[in-house]
Length: 298
DNA sequence: CATACCGCCTGTTAGC
DNA sequence: TGCTAACAGGCGGTAT
Image (cartoon, rainbow, N blue to C red):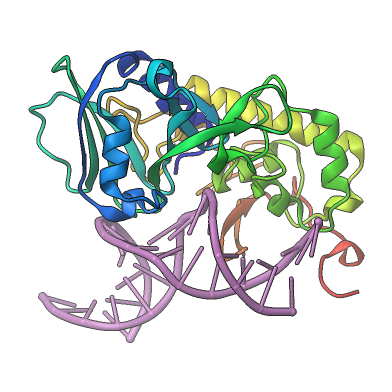
């Protein structure tokens, strides 16, 4: 599942292989992949033909490629990989992938950009850049509600701690809320909570500022180490633009490791159902909240 | 406003 | 063996 380290790895690949190359043809083969393009497939293709990508940017799990300023500097190709989306840079003679949804060809005849997505939760669209509201940089309108991510130099730690403590919800929910802190999905939420020795069911307004700061530090450690390894390819659906997986799965402490020993204390990792998805934690290192602190009715 | 939950998707695996 | 059901889960929309 592509989260911040995976999306950043893709962004880096795009920045090296698809910038400043005039686009000559665009093929949208699956309408669902561009469902957010309200004006339709032809409008999508027309916006890209003849221009080029000027840069590759990211916030949280969204990435976007601003179009060449000479023609349409206010617009970008916005991408979200969803559960299983891949942006691949492939030689033109490479056989079409089974779930190839969008193809972008360049005038130089070099490798083309392909959007491949098995579960179709991802998508592409052309969108206008707008002021971000929390800083000097512009972001696509589709991305404007997304908080800065913890690897963004302008991420405001104090604001995150303050806003989190104003909420009354489980801390894992808060980590997954992209309007509070972006880029974290189920895998890195569990890994970060384990590093911070916090149970994900702890309630945000009962956590102290130092505890939340240490959680934020754990989040940054996990994301940074995973990024160094090219991300996590837990279910092999995540690959970089060259089709290669990352290696962080080897370093996962709890995610997907039910029954195996906690790397810190040796106790068996426990799997629970949480928010209708799987969560993994160490029952010794991450003690559940006292009942009085539970989110359940008082 | 804050918070919780549903539905969208398909390939893989578990269970009968 | 063959079928069904569960599972994976990010996110926008909607309900409370």
